[in-house]
Image (cartoon, rainbow, N blue to C red; front, side, top):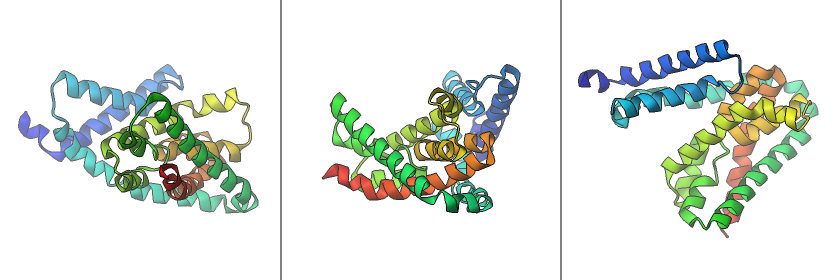
Length: 227
């Protein structure tokens, strides 16, 4: 049994099976809260804990899946290209909306850490939670944060965006697809964008461009919060 756990196939197979179960549950329950991604993560965590499987055994396979994160993010450029005419007409609102989103994210983390009395290491680890993982980790390492904490906060932000994007749009009466897409991409990066692509092609394209712009604005603005 241990020999099976020590192969990369274990982590890959477990991830695929857990996600398939999540998709099945989502179709059966027909509830937006039954998110396949959330269900898959919960199943994997429970399985590892119940059977006392070392995290290193799972990561041998999951790390291979993680290699596809950057290429998949780059493929989002296709949806942007298809909506290039709309993007050209809405370029200024998209840029200003993404800038406001990045600024709001940084301010909220700075304020919350100060309110809770958290130290600068935690602040450095959480500042980039709303941008895509490669950029978030690079910023954390630059400011002396904890990469593991950054990854955890980034995953939580993305998962919440994926889960709550449709609900929040209804709650705040957001009907414009451009605004909806920019909001999703600005706060929940690729995980949220996967939901935006399900909602509509325009939302997916705007969320995709917001990922890139949010990363750029966060890189430029984050150092100002450590002065």
